Image 1: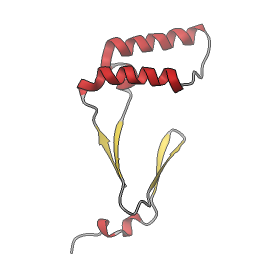
Image 2 (image 1 turned 30 degrees about the vertical axis):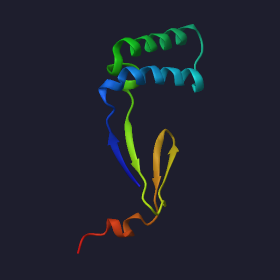
Image 3 (image 1 turned 120 degrees about the horizontal axis):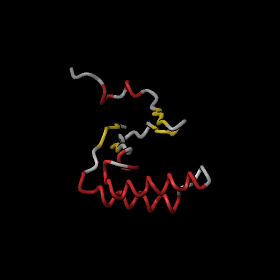
Length: 100
């Protein structure tokens, strides 16, 4: 498995801003409550819509490209808001050996 940083094309920023907003409404969970929180959330939503890719959720999003190998022994797991990659014996696989 190879994990690389990716880049989201700037031209997709408007579409992604709307998609993130829709997904948040469909599957997101509000972990805070009250009027003050509601106003903060709506202010962030508005900033995302107006500011585009330089504000809000899209500005705080990282894109990664994950490529699997044929042996499929590597696993990625979420743990404490981080990604843990488990891949026993990865360094011994032929693809990672130095050329002769």
